[in-house]
Structure formats: C-alpha cells, structure tokens
Length: 128
Image 1: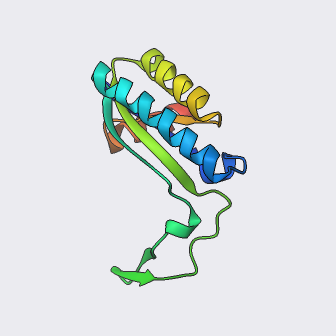
Image 2: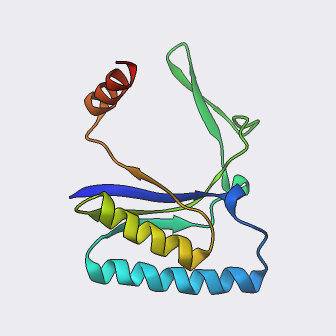
C-alpha cells in the first residue's frame, strides 16, 4: 500500500458563491465518507488559501527566522488536500478522478516516496 496526496491550488478554483461552497463541502464530505468506508482515507483538510498563511520561516546562520510577511512570492496557494492509502496508482487515479468530479475543479496527485534515497534515485535516473 502507498499513500497519495490529492490536492488542489486555490488559484485553480473558479469563483464560488457561498451556496456553491456549501454544496461542494457537502458533496466532498460524502466522498470522504466513502473513502473512510473503503478504508483508504488517511487525512483531509480544505479551506486553505493565502489568507490562512500565518508566517514564513527560513534559516539564517543555522537558526530559524520567522516572519509575519512578506511571504515567499508565489502565484499558487494550497487550497486543500486529501491523503489516501491505496494499493496502486490506478486506485489513486480512481479516487482523484472522483474528487475532481465532485468538486468540479482540477486535482493534482503525488505518491509519497520512501524518503530521500528514492528522490535521489529518481533524479539520477532522470539525468541518464
């Protein structure tokens, strides 16, 4: 079994009325309930956008430096995500497709790796 991140950026979401958001919330919670019943649900959170960012942190001379702003310059902000645990990419594709249809906005899927060694291996293979 592998864990997958199904996520969307806030910028991918078209303008929504409060009623639209209430409807999306209800339908997405119904899908999350299906994920729980299927035993694939790990964690989910939504309602994240640029306004929910609290602070940024970077290092200076080996110490953390916290700033209320300005934040890292970016055009994209995480809008929400769901983590599932399924046997393969095809199962992740199925759930992500259902999430995209339920919310009617794009989703991006990432498979969590086993760590740094796997990332180094993928990068090395990409250079050959």
